[in-house]
Length: 169
Length: 169
DNA sequence: TATAGAGTTCAATTTAAAATGAACACACTA
DNA sequence: TAGTGTGTTCATTTTAAATTGAACTCTATA
Image 1: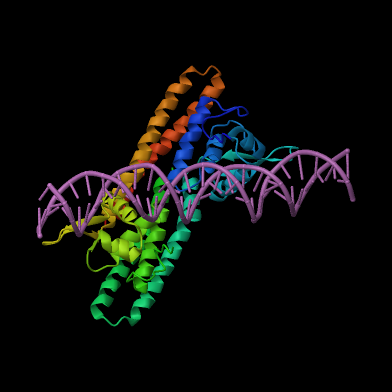
Image 2: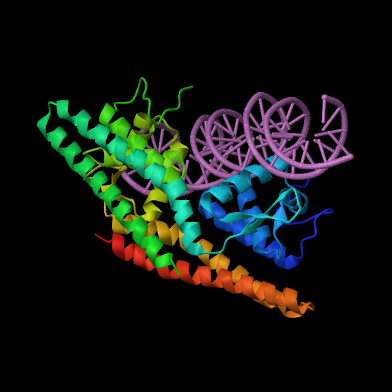
């Protein structure tokens, strides 16, 4: 079976521009550690004039309903796509959000901050662990290394808001 | 077989602090999209007072020579570890570099910039492609979207140096 | 110039991540 | 309340990434 977020086959209606834009986003989200399907979904919405429904994503990208549903969930959580209710229509339509500020903010909140928190926790545990080391020099060495880790964590926490600010239009 | 970058078994000499530090880095590099072995290697070097040779990594982390060799290559390229020549010794020793500035700089240069470049290229191709679209409104829509993409790319190129500067001690 | 140690390479394997698709839940409506 | 359209969930399958390990290169030295 030809799963294809870029090559296109029978059923989809993607023109070359869309294909190209989609592949751009597929590559882009990879850099952020997100699955290709997510890039494809965002790319398609981004390159469509009208909001699309889940079925459209399934058909035009030739992905499963499951992927589409999960991808949309992630994108909504990040704030990269928003829902549109259409008059009299039962299904939900989606469109791509384009405020880089929001995208970055959402991504940082969802994907980065949790990791930083768990890192901080680990570092705190370390502080406890070294308490009962006998070897004085070893203890000192570890103290320094842990301090270093903490400096990095602090710096990371410092940088994220700056990043958001700079990117905010 | 128990491959273990964190749990430890028979042959290795990792104390709980080291284990903890290593797992910290394993998680950390994951966030950057690097393989766990790389985090393990850096973590072990970071938590060792003495520089270590490839064999030490293999033994203490219980990974293959292949992984160790490839992981070290990547870390050296990034600038995260440096080689140490020891008097009269034939093998090469390695130690962890700790200048966040260098680490980030190396990572950006190695892993991020190439992606940005290829993105830029793609965006340029798009500019060419839309030239021969007939539908005026569609054309305009695509022009706007491509412009948006270009704005993002520009912003990314702007942000990286800032990031480096802020992180530089 | 054979032998051994140190490190690299890369095809084959293993492991982890992503995608699928069938079963399910919900809401509307005929 | 049975049926239909829309979307979700999650066990299974597929695909991609990471790791292994055997074969190899290179250098030193016996």
